[in-house]
Length: 273
Image (tube, rainbow, N blue to C red):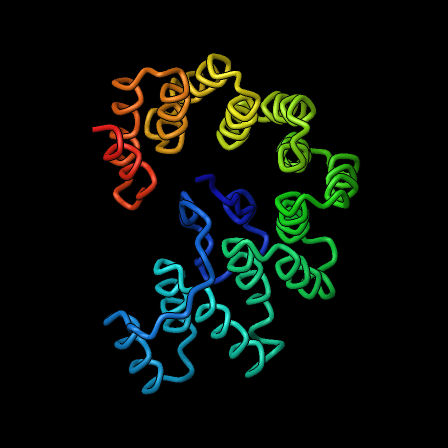
């Protein structure tokens, strides 16, 4: 119900095969699943790979398709295969694998993947930020040290915004919501257009049962980005908590209207009809 923020959206240091450039990233964290029912697209891509085993583009498409299907086991297995085939040429697949592990909520594994990548590129901001965010999502205190180091070493507001955001995520996950909101505010100060910071701030306010404050934050976000599906979803949750059924339904419908893969929003709307 919340997005896993991927810092390849913000940094192009590596530009991993174009895979991590989707906006938004996969909508809600999915389960690690291994299905025996093969998507026809997957079957076709595997056959193309059999015929053209040196085509990285086809491997990327297959990993993308498994990711879209939330079949993270299979996607990670193909990353492992590429890393085994040519560890030097395919080294950047550690970043791809780390992202997949975060989407599957395997935060410890994601940290290990980022560390493997950082052995070669220890100053890569994309990997450092994603590793810190994985630690924060997992509620690991070490994420604070990582974030503070990024804030102190950076000369840009962009990276400082990311550092405060990651600290906010950590405090949210351990339910210290006041500290979380304080850091999300600092993140917004450094980057006014950091929509994920607004969303996480609103969710922290919701978790405090400060539903009116959460709505105000979401309204501020939607004034600037009226197509942000998650903002409508969380407005729906706020209105539902305030027993305003019609407003809740309207917002759930809006979220699903903007994003037809937003099954949570559709289910919420259907439950209120």
